Image 1 (cartoon, rainbow, N blue to C red):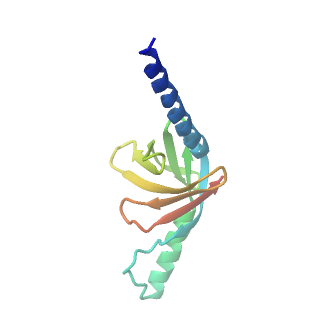
Image 2: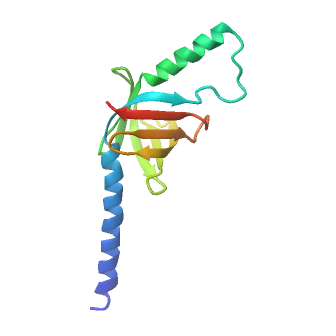
Image 3: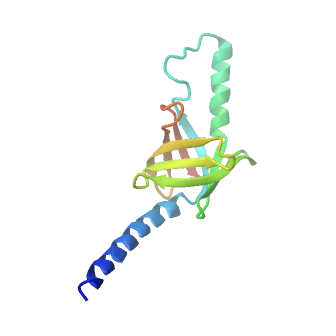
Length: 140
């Protein structure tokens, strides 16, 4: 009887942790549309010509046309408009504060700090590649 109490506590604690993870996956599971991009041009890069300015505007428009769909089976799709450009799986790490997206080909792994995750908003900050990029999403 004394042995069953620690086992029951272990399963109870595991169920609580698992239910919290389910909440994050539940909130993330939908199609998200990028509505704002911050720091798309890394510090130290100067826009010196009208062409640079136009390229920066086009890049920002392209990034804002991105949408991500996260599924509850831990799969994701990234699309530009309606054209899917990347598929793979995702993981939530560090108490659901880090999103890791791994492409099907495994040649691309992107890590993002989850700043905000709610029913109506998702804010991600890149922590791989250029660290200053911040992406704001709303449900599609």
